[in-house]
Image (cartoon, rainbow, N blue to C red):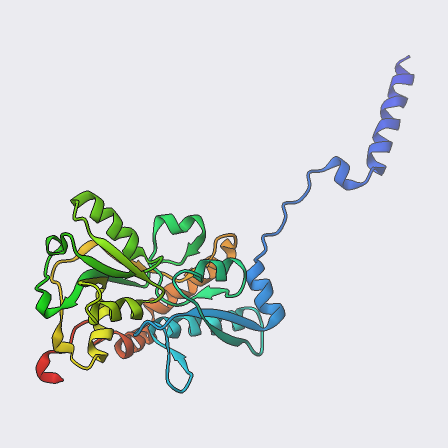
Length: 286
């Protein structure tokens, strides 16, 4: 009896040894992949989104796309090329608007949005952000004759703001909390919102200060405008925008961006694009 039992055990062990390995072992974890990195390597192309927002991203008269954020993204692109072992990487700059930038990312029209994107909790439901690379303040921009300097001066007034911007979300919150009865007129671009205010269609524009200074300084009469000392709402942290479902690509961009911001090269880029860009020209300089 004992001999018969031992023979059965030996037979069972011999069968298990002959079974394919996956049946007697746990499957190996799948290696993480990045759809964006795979696409970039396969196509030898990086599609970058931008908008006309000096000094961060804009197209020059000769067609060159440039600016502070574009400079950062160009370095990221070069690091991508080296890391993926590619000899060449073509960069396609694709114009996007406030309203279509998220759909442009999620439909793979662009791989990285390098225009001005404020990091906002509600947006993180649809997209991913890099760590912040610039912090701006939102202020009230108006024509001097309107005598608008503080939020309370906007009581019952009409203001313009770009559709889909973080500014509009912040303004709606402030309007409700302070019961200012402000009316909003939205536009597709920041430039259009500024023009509405400049042409007296609205009383004011609430906008990140560094963006406002660019429009004012390029106008025929910068002295006609005022920028409030009062800061409205929370600070605006800018980040690069990517698809939400690609953590490996986000991690790569974050690591490279961190290296750029700590490097001596960044001081040169910031000096070129940001120094003297954070204030309005005085009337005597016009």
